[in-house]
Structure formats: C-alpha cells, structure tokens
Image: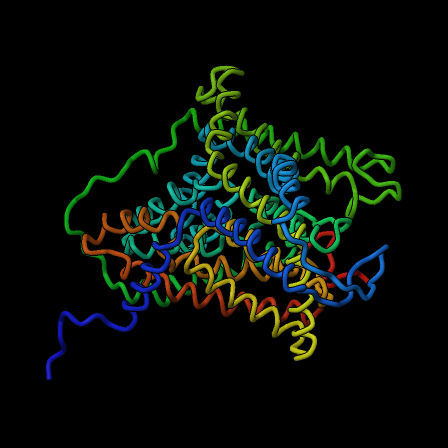
Length: 519
C-alpha cells in the first residue's frame, strides 16, 4: 500500500500544534497585565475563604515557624496600594537599572560597528579545520551583544562553510546552535546576567528582602558551559548534521553580501584602537584592585563576595564595551564626535522601549504577588510538598530544567518566562534550602536548550529566510528537524554537567552558594 503524500507526520503535527498554541498567546506586555489582574481577583477570593499556609520563614535572620494569610487587593488598603505604589514598583524593579546601564555601553559598541567587525575578523582568520568550533564558539560569545549574532554570524557561518566547499546549511546550523542554543553560556558577563539576576532579586524579596542576588552568581558554571556547548555543537555539526545534508549543489549563483565578509583597512585600524583601549582599561581596573585599602575592596580587604568590585560589575561591563566601542568608532569615522557617541547611546535606549513596557507590568505583577502573600503561600505549600516526597536536590533540578525547556516551546522571551516562573520557584527552592542562583541556573539551561527548535523564538522566521538562500524549500519543518539534534544534545549533556557539578559540590558562581541560607 502506498503512503498518502498528503498525510502529515506525527512529528510535524506536534510542531504545528506548538506553533498554533504559541501564536495564540497574547503579547508579553498584555500577558503580564492579565496576570496582574488575575492576582487581584485571586487574592480577593482566597482572602474571602481564609486561605493560609504555615511553614518556616526568615525572620530576624532565622528560620521561624510562621502562618501566612492571603491579603486581598480588593480592599480599601489594597486599592490604595495599587495606585500609590505603581510608580515606585516600576522604578525599584531590580532588572531596570542593571539592563539599561549595561546597554548604554553595549549599544555604543554595536552602533560603532565594532562587534560586527570582531565577528567577521574571527571567522576569516580561522583555519578550515577549526571552522566549526570557531563558529559555534563565536555564536555562544555573541550573546554579549544582543542581536549581533543572529544578524551577522548566522548568515556568515553559512557563507564560510560554502566558501570551504561544505554545506552552507550546516554552517548556518552551527552558528544558530551557538548563538541561540548556547544563549546562556559565555566566558564574559553580558546583558543577560544582570537581567535575570534582577528578576531573581525581585522574586527573592517575596521571602527575604535582605538577600542579595549576585550578578555573577552563575558565572563559573556558564564559563565551563561555553566549552561544553562548543564541543557538542562541533560534534553534532560534523558527525550528524552535515552527513545528513549531503553534498551541497547550488541551484543558482546567488550573490552573497560582500559586506558580511569584507574587513576594510579602516576597520582593522579601529579594531587595533579598540583592543588597546580595552587593555588599558582592564589594566587600570586591575591596578585599582591591588592596594589593600582599594575602594574596590570591602572592609576586610576582600575583592570577591559582598564587595564594591562585585557591586560595580554592571558599570564595569558597560565601560568595557563603551570605551573600545568609542575608540573603534572614532578611528573608523562611524563616530565623528561626541554627539555621535551620545546618539549611539540614545539609539540603544530607544531600542529598549519594549523592555520598559514589559518591565512596568512585570514589576506590578511581582509586587502584587509579594503584597498579597500569594507567592509566599505557594512557596510554602510547594516546599512542604517536595519535602514530603523527599525527591532530593538533583532530581528536583532536573525536573525544573525539563519544565523550563518545555515552557520555552510556547514563549520565546527568556526574561518574560523568568518573570512568570521566578516569583513561584525561587522562594519555593529557598524554603527547600537551595539558593536563588541555583534555581536561576537550572532555568537558564532548560531555556537555552530549546531556543533553537521553537517557532516562538523571535528570530526563527529570519533564520528560515537565511536558509532559503541555499534551499528554496526550507521552512519551519526543515529548520526544526536540522536543529533538533542540537537541542536534545544540549539538554541532555548540559543537564548531566549540572548533575556532576552538584554531586561534586562545586561553586556555580562568584560569591554564591548552592544552598540557602548558607550554613
């Protein structure tokens, strides 16, 4: 019996279902406004029924048995709170300042063209046998600069593979795997770290306002993860993806965008100026850290932990991009003076409009959670449940990784999802004795691993357009089928790394512990 050519496979039916569900979700700003409204209604209902929970909470620096009752927002005091605190909720929203300050520096580096040129220079100077690992590695590193990896490195990866006689779709896949699948990993601290840490801080305040979430709380683990993703991405590209694609036969002699591979003499001079300025800046910071009475050290003379150096990390990140970016722009003439630099900063802020809108409604949602005590009650109830089943640290983290990966199929924004999950899971894990940074780390693993197979990812349609330059029939099914081995490999091996890490009791970040409270 012949197969029905019109029959849609189970695999594609699943993908189509995911796409339909995801497309029906409202805009994240609308979604959080709905969530905030839901908290108002739920708080009134729960308060009317006398909902409460009893458990151990932090009080006076100690864990004490406490009974918590729901506070309604549909009362005189509740309505007064919503109207009088809205502005303060927004301006004190932890991610707000961190992200905006970091983006001032990153925006200058992007607008000057420095980051684009760095990516091109790195790929062009790579030997052929190192092409795959270099593209994957640069993809991971490119998430420092927000969207640069998507718009520059992914089409560049396809072009470099084609130039070497390899299948361009494999190069595109390798770059996409690094840029999006390895989104959370990096050797440096980028804009994602302060963004997620700020959201985590807001969630922590539900339970323990005195606890300070470290921006570098996942740094050590993510530093090592960079090499894991590079190795996995290289292996999957060379051993699975490219053999499956076969030999590439061009359908036509389409023109490539020469600007994606050409580096002008002025750009080379700009990179030298940027490198020198960055080195000078780093040396100055190091010199400032050396004296025992340095302003970067705390009263005990320490550099790590609760110190001015760690508290200054977001500003230092911004300057590390701002200074080289400015030097590059002045040398290449993309910046002709201080007004151009100021305009670049303004453009970076203009691009944050959607973030500001989301931040406003997210801040209200989280603060409503805190005011009504719903977050605390959910955390207490969930913590008691997990204590009763005694599932243990490692199984709990793996379950949360898988849950985060599944959620990512329906909502692409990492910050939007974390705004939803953090107020519930961070306090819950804290009550179980696990640090907020560890909860955040598990989320980042799951979220990154499935970025490359969900049509809900912002740039998914753009990547398909890039692929269609080499395969006119490429679509969602083509891209998802190509990227699925990466997603499975990253999820399994990254989770395994987390298991080994936890089993060994290694630190996941700077000045952070696996457990809460630290004992």
